[in-house]
Structures are given as structure tokens and as C-alpha cells.
Length: 74
Image (cartoon, rainbow, N blue to C red; front, side, top):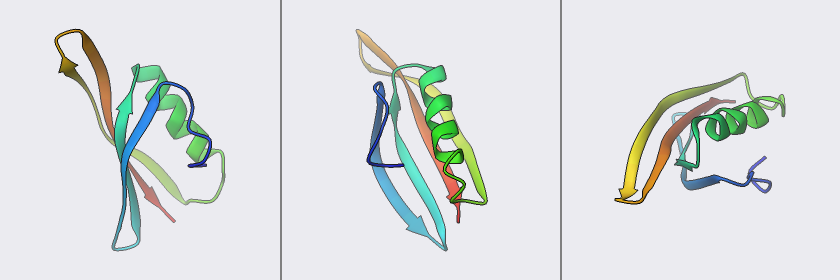
């Protein structure tokens, strides 16, 4: 799951709190972020995978990306 991150996705942090896994990062497009969530869901390792945040951000004046936060319940 996390060793095959698709092109256009850049996870920046992974944390575990109260049994919930959170993955934060950036994706080139909204579709790329949603497809990444789908890839995690397809593993059937988790009971729930949810996008808690998906918003457009400007990394600099020329670069606009999607910032995401994915919450995963085992």
C-alpha cells in the first residue's frame, strides 16, 4: 500500500492516534488523490478509509496542488 505510491502523490506524514491512521500529503490533481484513496481501500486491510481534507493550495505562485488528509480505521 505505502510502498507503491502512485505518480503525482506525495505523502508527507503518517501518524497513528487512538488506533486511527492518518496520512497527510499532496497530490497533483483531485483525481490523483481520490485514486490514491481507492488504492488504499482496495487492499481490504481496513474497515474504513475516508478523505478528511481535500483542498487546493498554492505551493508557490506557479504550483497549485491538492492537499489531502486521509483517515484510516483498521
